[in-house]
Image 1 (tube, rainbow, N blue to C red):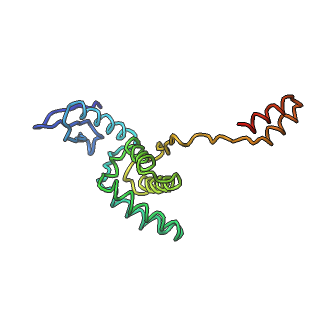
Image 2: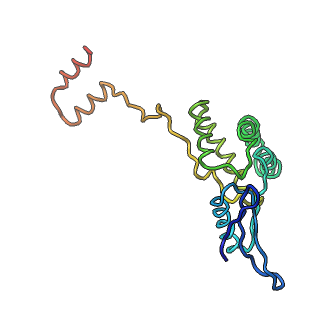
Image 3: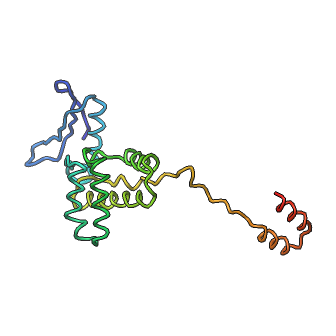
Length: 202
C-alpha cells in the first residue's frame, strides 16, 4: 500500500488503500493540504499509524482553556487536597488560560511551551518555585490529556526546562581573616603576620 497525493481544487489530499471489507477495497482519504509535500508527509504518518493500530486517530480540536477546565473539574478536584487545588486553580485562571487558552491543545509544541516558560521566568520575573508549580500543573494536565482522554499523543512538557538566569551563578564565599589564620596554622605556613598586616591596612 503506497501513499499517494492528488489535487482537488485549490488543495491537495492524500490517500492509501485500507483493509478490504466484504471483499471490497477501501481507501483512507484526507484533504485540505496546501502543497503535495504536506499531503504526502501527513499521509505517510497516517499510514504508519494505520499499519500499527488498524485505525486513524483523529485528535479533537479542544482548546487549552476548555481542556484545563475539564482537567480541573474531573481529575484535579478528585485527586488533590484543598491547598493544592487553590494553587492550581490560581495558576489556571491567572496564567494558563489567560496566556494559552485560545490555542488548540493538540497544536502546542515543546518549543512553544519552552518559550512560554522562558518568558514567564526571565521577562515577567516570577520566582523559580512559582514557575515550577506552573510547569507541574501543565505536566499533570497533559498526562491526563493522553490517557484517558486521548486528546494528544505525547506530553510536550516533558522536554521543557526552567531556564537559567544570569545572576544564578554559584555564590562566592567571603573568607574571613580568622579562617585564613586557621588554614595557615594548620599547614604551618610562614608569613601570617605580613598577611594580617595587609588585611588590616586594606
